[in-house]
Length: 572
Image 1 (cartoon, rainbow, N blue to C red):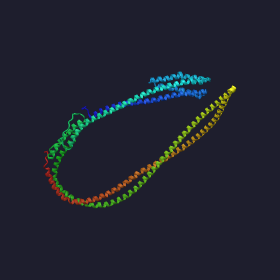
Image 2: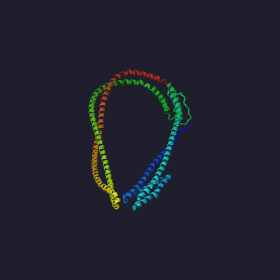
Image 3: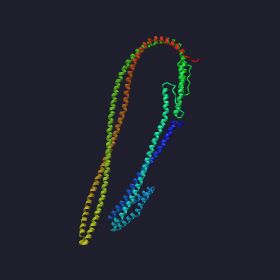
Image 4: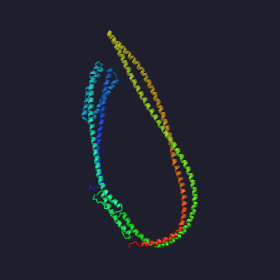
């Protein structure tokens, strides 16, 4: 591993961690998918079982209705629909359970029992009903109902078997999830240990290198440097730093010679990219050239001093003229400053008025938005009321159907009671009590028929009222939608007003800022002119002292020539 770089170590380490995390994540997802599949299958099994039981119950109820009224087409249709739905449901369950043989055998047992027993009993019962056989009711009670109960047991056994299998699958999914969580824990622990080892392998050589750098930072170039044979970045950094220190030591020795006055010392760069070495080499060369130039230039300094003295007298006269001119310009600048301040105040008032208008318009837009939202809620509420009125109309229609059925039952009851009265009359003395009962039944049937007519009339009145309410709510909803449209138009126009006001406000602010800047600039110009006048006066006074300075400069030039002569230069 010593031949690996830090980047390679990081790539390998994190690659292993990512692969391990991927494996753990796959295991976790697999367990989650198993549990989700178990929940979904449990729901499917429950739905299928409920549909089967509902179809069986519907068929039984329809058969009971046919026992009362063999010609009732509604009950016949209910029985046929339930029979078809039961067959369809079982076929769908079989297709779903192709990969689960035990449950498939259970549902096939249910289907086989339905085909060979329950359907057979239904057909026999329907034949008895069609012939008007009085034994149909006894057959329904003694033969069909036990067969249906046995069918319910088979369906319950199928449901229990499915629940047991799904419970086993759920437990397996949970066991895999616990394994995945444990695997994640091991990965986390291994990652912490690996990071600690990796950090330790990096921090130890860095600490050693930092100790040496701390000594070097204090200016001590004799500090010992750590030695590393590794080929990673830290080892390369240590070796490169050692070469840098060696270069600095050679530069330090050459700099000490230059400080002693020996300009023949050479600064040798380590390579073409050694910026510091090249700069020091160039510095030594230019320093030697500079000393040579100073030696030659010191001879001409004395003659230049004489010319400087003459120029100083001319500058003194010019400075006096500049002072007078700046005084006049300063007065004009003060007038400009006053005018700019007045204009800036006016623009500021205009800007504040525009901002207030923008705030008021924005508040109006918020109020319009709230009004729009309220109108929309009213429209939605009207739609909900309309839907409920429609449902109420449908319910009233259903009540009408029920009332019709009750009327039919009352008519049949009346006929049965009439037949019973006739039979009782034939029986003579023995049928007298039965005749009284038949008369009472006929009286109740007449009352039921009368009440049914009243209920039917009330249902029609309710339907008429509901229809009128629906039409009124439709008209109200249309008016609300028109109001919403008008509110949206007003909101759009108000938004355009706000946009125009907001676009004007930044321009007014820009003008105000420009006027303030102009006023500030005028004040600064005035102050600068005052300072310029003062500087001109000080310049005139300073030029008086220039002659004395020229004499001292001549003496300094002589001292400079004496100091330059001590430097040792290369002979050309």
